[in-house]
Image (cartoon, rainbow, N blue to C red; front, side):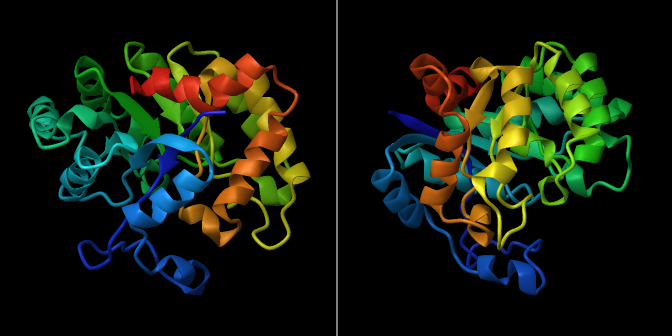
Length: 280
């Protein structure tokens, strides 16, 4: 079965620091993770296309990712960053689209999970920026915590012409075993037709050392019921996933929690939804 990996990262610390990698728990990530490393994994596990996603909120990173994409037949899309609150946001997006690799710019995101303002996503300047993203024909990736799902719902309702892609199912509290209020909030987001979600990042929300597929299954089942396979896509979240699992283990877990789907539904989760949502 063809696989599109809708969410992975790349970084070269010699080119750009990843200032979020701090402390002993994240120490295994403080090294280079390059396109050549990712390609070996992709080739070994049937991944034929991918979407590389920003990690740091600096303007220089997105052009670097676009340059990587333009030289790669594997990277089909880039989710980058630019300042949504900038008065010239439309011009900034247009400038990115004109860069080498610009046609592979498929979306933008911001590290909302780190914003101290609980209403950041629904600020007037942010909503204005999100409207500009929609007019540019891009999608917007939501990287949020489960406690921020409420503001994501309000933002998606306020900008109905923009497709919102929820990264990592909104980071449910898997390690605790609780599903509420995350499940109720996820269903409210999924009720909006301009939303899709990624079956990604779950292993690092579980107990890194002792997780099992059974720990992930209840959350995957809620997501499948809420969004349906046609609005859910696989993403590895490599290399962040390596804190808890190898690439093949993450892929195997995703296949396990979707094993009861029909072949057409599995095709949607593993390639069709990403291809459609991002226009790959």
